[in-house]
Structure formats: C-alpha cells, structure tokens
Image (tube, rainbow, N blue to C red; front, side, top):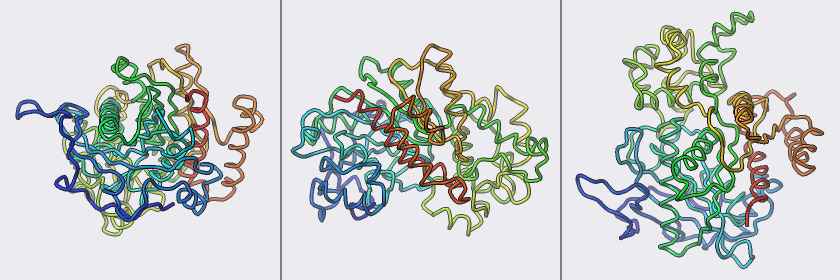
Length: 471
C-alpha cells in the first residue's frame, strides 16, 4: 500500500536538531536515547497533506487487499523520524533510527493521551530499510494502518545497522543488544513527542513484532521487566512467529544433512528453513562481532563466499542482484546452505554441533528466550505450517512459560477452528478460517510463503488482544 512518495536519505545537516536532550564529551558519548536529529510530516514530504487523511489510508489498504484485516481507519496519521543514540553489543556508542506514527483526528480514539505500541520489524537484507518510508516499506505501511490509524502511537525502530545507523553491521538475533536498541528508540520517541507536541503518549505500553521482530519483542519484554521496571511498565506483549528456541532451531539446521540421511532423503537441505541463505550470514556476522564464534571467514564459508560474506548483508543491492552477481547461492527458496554450490563448510557444521556450550551453539543458547518468566500479559501467534520459522519455536516457549506458572495463549493460524473458537472466541476463529481459506496449503506457492502470508493475520489478532487492555 502506498501513502507517500519515497523518502530520500536524511542528512543530519538538514535535520531538526533538538537541543537540551543530552550531550557529552570525548570521554562521555551522548546518553542512551539522546535525540540526534528528527524530522516530521512536511519535513519528510512537503507534497503530502498532513496528517495523512484516514481516507488516503483506506485507499491504500483497499488497494493492497488488507482492509478486511486492518479495518477502516479511525484516525489520520502523523509520521516522525528520529535518529537517536544507543549502544552496540560491545557497549560502544552508536546511532539508530525509528519511525513514530501518531494518530490524529476528532474521534475520541485519536485524541488526548494515547497508548504506545513498540513494534519490532522482521528480517530484511535491505541496508536502507526505514519503517518511516511507508511508500516503499510494506511492513511500515501495514503497521501504521493496523495500529496508528486505530488510535495507538507506534514506535517502530529500524535497528542498528539499518537506514542511517552508524553501526556497520546488524546485531541480528542478539537478544540483549536488540532489546537495548528498542528501549533507546522508545526513550527517544517519547522525548521527541514531548518536545514537539506532536502527540501525547500514555503510560500504557504494548510490545509486539513479527519474525525477527517476534524474537526482538520477546527479548524486549524480558529486558524491560528485568531492568527498566521503574521507567516503563509493559501493559501486554504479543510476539509473533519468532525464533525463540534458537538452540533447537540452529541445531536443527546445522544437523540437517545428518537428519535427512537418517530419514532416507537425498536432499542435503531437506530440514533447512526457507530463507536460510539470507538469515545465516546475518546471524553469523552478528554473533561473530559479539562473541567471536569462529577464527576466520574461510573456516565458515565455502571458497566462493569466504572473501565477502562477512560484510555482505545488509546490502544496498537486492537479493536478486546479489544472486546474479554470485554473491548468494542461486536457489529460489534460499535453502542451499550446505553441499555442492552451498554456502557453509562441512567442517564448520560438524564442529558447531560437537560444541554445544561454545561457538555457534553457545551463542544460540545465549540468545534462546526460554528460561524466564513474563511478569505481564502475553499472547503469541504463529502458523504450525511455517517453513521459515518453525512452529515449535512458539510451542516450546509456551510450554516453558507454563512450566514456570505462566499461561500464555498462542494462536495457531493453522489450528482446528472449533478449538480456536473455544479458546479465543468466534472472531478469532473467523480470522483463522479466513487465513486458511485464503492461503490453502494445497497450493504449493502458499506453502513457501506461509511465513509472510501469516503476518497481517497475526497482526490483526494482536490488535484485538491489545484492545482487551487498552484505555
């Protein structure tokens, strides 16, 4: 859905620098959450009528076919873009940016103090990814329509390593580092709203995100409750389709050739998830920077990729262009991780599996989100047929929480509809039924796209769940 023309890169010299929001010296970098620059509305696009009218949002959701899920817009929407100071996984100062979507209008749901949704986005290989650029960012436009146009202020960080971030890589699935980034984005956004008067955030805080963002959302709830309870209170959280059990997930992928042999499959990638050749380099670079999980790139990558893979992603080139240039394996499902033409050395794979407490598997254990107890409301959403982030990530987390005395409901969009109605009610059963009817698994192309197809349906479920607590 398209609301705006594309944003150009935003040079700091053209940005509105907000004074009095922090500072520092050579020995003391600006405090976490310090606003470095900010732009809003006409500064982002002088040709757009501001705020974006609800009718324009409706035209976008109607054209993209998601209005049955988002509903008609209740509010107009302002957009702000904030560059802020945070810390990288080593604790060094770095900048990152966030989109801020703010409802506006005469409806009571659009005025006064508004609840905040802290939203974590999914995996992307695009270096220029910017949630505020809703003309070109499908996840950003969906988030604006799903939450901001219904009365929530949305804070949607772009993460370290993307957009204008000063960090040269992305700390992919580094739970603690990404939670710090999210907290600092929230701090900066709330400071900006206070200084600018663009909107008034209430004390209510909802946390959600999809895919990588599901992992980030869960990590952020954990860290907020553990370290920032005096500053923020999580009203409710709803991670969606995230890789929470990284020990099992990474272990399965590394073991896939052995597993395939044990079940008689001749496909060496039979248990590798869809998208693995994109996710794995992001993951290896992230954990190498944080923990030092290997000696050199040639220890990990096959010769065709060892010379550049550590710095390839995120990239300013498209995946198609990278494949055409021989930078990524030529496989439409992005699963060619091992074997002839693949990406990863057999020696690295076997060594990783032999060392459960160090290297790759030690890092996976560090960033697995089991073994903690949510203090506030939580629900989850996923598909048991997801070929990208396997469903056991959700059910394993759910079982772990239950073992600690916390019942976390989890909507399986591929679940039995009668069971869903009993657990969640008729509206949620209708939502799951619509998903199953729209994306029948008898159609092969739907099977490969299950992860992305489920995203807007999970977001609709999450908004309904948050409505139980929103004031």
